[in-house]
Image (cartoon, rainbow, N blue to C red; front, side):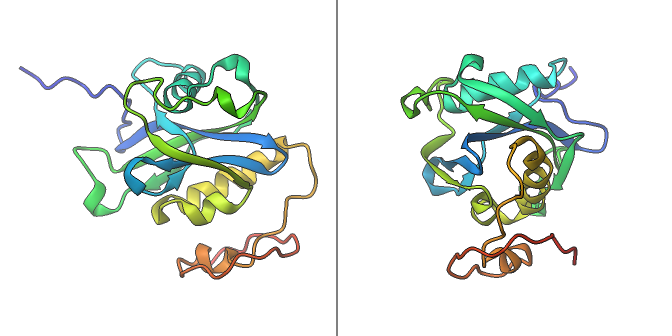
Length: 194
């Protein structure tokens, strides 16, 4: 008997299709969830199932991870295409070597009391907070940082504010993978590629 296909779609290159959700409450203030058991901080995200439209996965994951309904948000925009990251070797399972993510920027319209973390049974988050726009880059696990940088830069065009907030003082250290120093604000700049 052949093995059952995975519920989530994994492309021929080994990347699991996924949606990422940047939930904004005010210009350049975003939701950051604390993963169960102290396993770090991240934006809500989740897999796209076989045959599921990406937009449908977005609203399913929004409900499963933070308990919100489509009426609680306005979709402001999405990345133009898939953003990919590879998993570290110790995290690779089966034929999935990483994730390709389509990111969405949503404006939250409700009160914080609307959040429910047990909507799908097993909660993904056991804590959360509203943070400055760039903070998630420092808080997310190191192998997702590049995707967070790309997603936040690309989605910024939908915020409606110009210019982007300046990079914090810790920015260059975190982007290079060094331990971050005390955060402070800097003037706006451009991202330099190493």
